Image 1 (cartoon, rainbow, N blue to C red):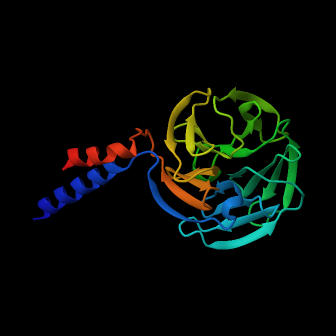
Image 2 (image 1 turned 135 degrees about the vertical axis):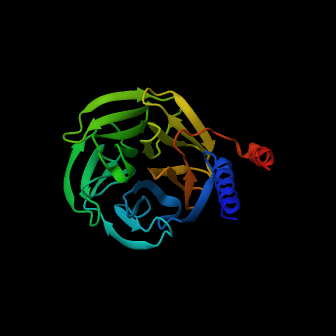
Image 3 (image 1 turned 30 degrees about the horizontal axis):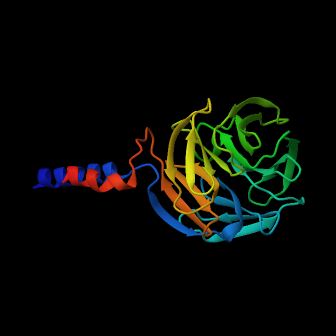
Length: 256
């Protein structure tokens, strides 16, 4: 009897894994910034949200529920956009209003320092080796005119490389360290995955229009859509194979 149960459990687990596909929504909640969300960042414990409607506000949420733990007003004026988290509780904030990137204490927003980016840093993401910004060595930033992804040194912000991407965007970016992909939203409703040389590796439809904020953690993308003010948790597996939602029924049928 134990052998039969084991076979059934393994089969069900394999089938469930096979049904998951890149871009599959597994959860959602309303953003505290509503349709004015401009950036997301993820630590091991929290999800950070930048609010463009109330300039300088950053919310710290529980990622599983979206409940707000605290929020704070950043100490400078400007339309803050991209967020990135790196280990040692550092939050990086891009400010296109003055082309600066700020380094802050993530729980409180206290300012550690800043550097000039030489472009509009609409998006920020850590170039890291683990979830929650673990092993961050550089910082990605994204701009729209021209559409480039820059790689900055953490100290001083000097650009060590830039890549041109085919789709203009002033949205936030996320770094998927497992697949070495930079994810960027594009207007109105597509999310693109770029290799570190700038070619498009994959894409999928955003669950709602204007996927403004993105961050990556634990084989999932968190995507904030300003079309409806929701944050979505989206499947983004290691060594993913993109399966269109219209094909999912066919895949399930083959597994029966």
